[in-house]
Image (cartoon, rainbow, N blue to C red; front, top):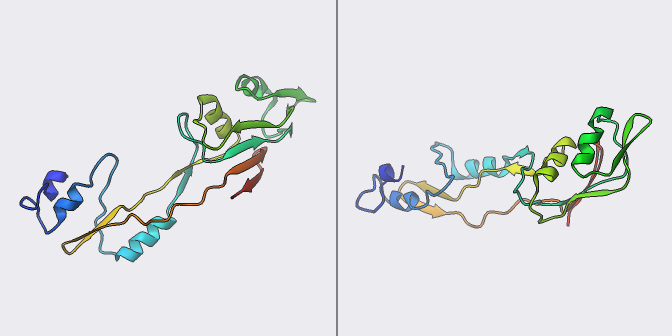
Length: 169
């Protein structure tokens, strides 16, 4: 793609495309549209898809599982939950978390076990976003580096899949 746009001002197809070409690194894409810059920025500022965190991701928040029954899991899941490090037992056929359990602290690098626990409890910690780093239009190249970052809650308490308390600071 860099070759098609031009790597130097002498090779470029249109004015200042070599500046855009120099920005293409890693997982980068190009969007060609007739929409205005404002429309595109508004769309991508609002665009976000939640996903489950994977091992190796940094935890953006602290997640705490509250003690008590966890009826959304069948009794056969109890050994698997215990193997993941959760303090569980079966009480009258219902999996019960014996004490509060901190799955991860904000800033921790997630282990495979932590990522699996978060997924089992339905807690999506990852977000897929597209950030616009620059705009080329009519021969003008503009780098956008003053984009606001999304607000991420710092602490989450989870009591089963249905109840979540979120604290933002």
